[in-house]
Image (tube, rainbow, N blue to C red; front, side):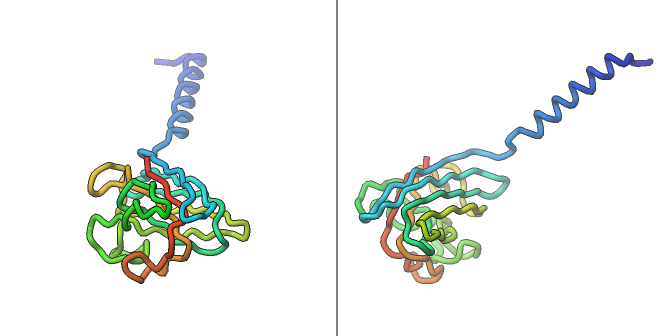
Length: 174
């Protein structure tokens, strides 16, 4: 059976449209975010977004008002940033009961993330893909928990929190 040229062209246009639609679809999973608010007398503000990508969680942060240099950056147990020093966020998110450690190591808190590094203007951005985290509620999920930025760098070894200093920003993950 021979197909006419207009039918072949229409078929090619339909296939091209379908391929274009598939190419622009977002293959990523669920999303959440936190709006950071100043704590401990700081001027730190920003946003942190989370998105499931395969078996990992992509974390992207855009922060302003930091002192230049590295700052500890963690997910904390409680989704409560009401205390002036963010102590209401409690300790690091640690459902497996492990020691604090480097964000790429196997033996660490689930909430241990890379340090944020602020430029000379106090701005920091971060994009990282982490394991041990999921966008769910409950004992192993991070929804309704908090993100905290600390005044000092995380040394990735001091217990229980990497000697990161006071909490200068906090936001609840929604």
